[in-house]
Length: 182
View 1 (cartoon, one colour):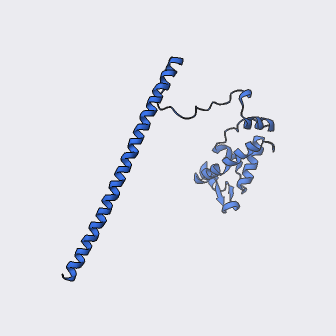
View 2 (cartoon, rainbow, N blue to C red):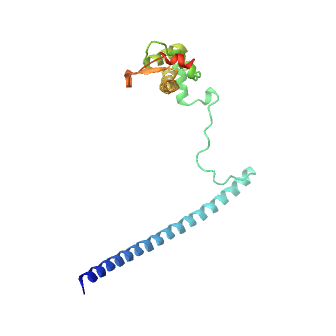
View 3 (spheres, rainbow, N blue to C red):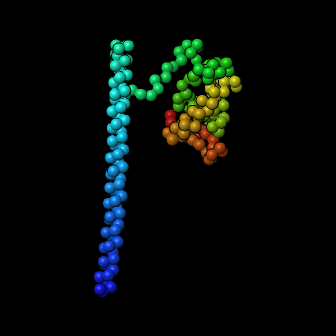
């Protein structure tokens, strides 16, 4: 045989061998998937039989049928009275935390930003002072401080205030943005 025919024959044989391996792989894969599907169907039919049995006993006891597909934990009920408070709630009450923070909208934060450049920490401290939060109300102060960055970012992006610097050196002030916002 000529060298071209020999190399063509070898290439075809290699391709054929590869195709056979692929067919064997997919044949085994099809068999495994069919087995898995059969197992799922048998488990599903067992679950349905069990669910039907449970529904029958529930219907006998309560006079109603359970809703199918309702699984998992029941919805958590909110603590409405002091006797049903969680541990965390009891600790907060013992520390003197007084409920939730008031609404701190954009106008609230805008009042705290002055012509003098201030850091976000200074603005957060001014907000805590303005709201009359005490040092022992740590959770309330923490919640307030979590509101500072998004509020300042919104004020800067809406050009109601300006900022200078980067990172922790960033300072916020009214500057020329004040005239544009009014």
